[in-house]
Image 1 (cartoon, rainbow, N blue to C red):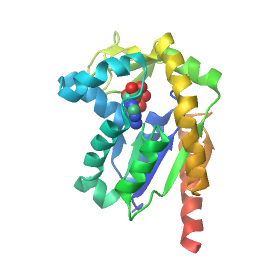
Image 2 (cartoon, protein in one colour):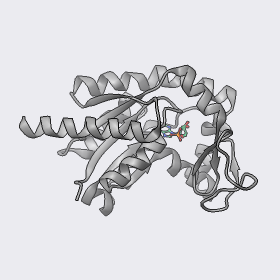
Image 3 (cartoon, helix red, strand yellow):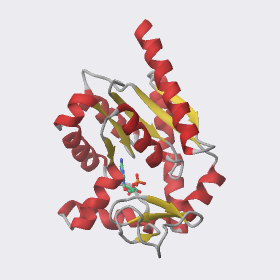
Amino acid sequence: MVPGARLVVLGKQGAGKGTQCVHLSHHYVVPHVSTGDMLRAAVKQGTPLGRKAKEVMDRGELLGDDLIMEMVAERLGESDVRARGFVLDGCPRTVEQAEQLAEILAPAHLDLAVDIEVPTAQVLRRLAARRVCTDCGANYSTSQPPKVNWTCDICGGEVVQREDDREEAIARRLELYERQTAPLIDWYRSRDLLASVSGTGTPDAVTRRIVKAIEARRRRKGRA
Ligand code: AMP
């Protein structure tokens, strides 16, 4: 059996993080922990967190570090994650979050932070075309819509464009990425915890590249 893993996946919005995290969670048999999905579920359920988060998310801004890390710490403390590990999607987004994550995991460490690299022009095209199921979060696009009338092939939910995939919010999110999230790449690199992988090509090809990088890292650490 493939061993568990403790992974963070970084990359611009639209780099394919969500898809790759699903593939990696199946490959390593670990939970996919997505802060965006957790927040969207809270918005849908109308919880106090969801009410607070909705407006910020619709504008494409980031929520506060402490609020996010409290939510993440709670999830990472659950038994499935403690037993096998996790693929963390959408977090950390700031150096402060990366520092808090390291504290939450101590004395253990991450196996690796994987940065999926895709040129900005390409992510802009992908985001503008992206459509998602409001119930299960499945991804579609204008060129690969669901089979019947914008209802999800998997669960029958309504398939729509995310508020924060509209042009203005996309520009804001990419600007925030450059300012707040890109420094994370240096943070992980300086701790020898980073692998950069090209995110172009088919999703399966990207997954193979990522798994190869993770296995190479494991062999190297095993020898260290
Ligand atoms: P995502 O689906 O990962 O793009 O997340 C959607 C939105 O949720 C983001 O644009 C933020 O408003 C919020 N969000 C998700 N993860 C975080 C995080 N780690 N820190 C701050 N805000 C977050």
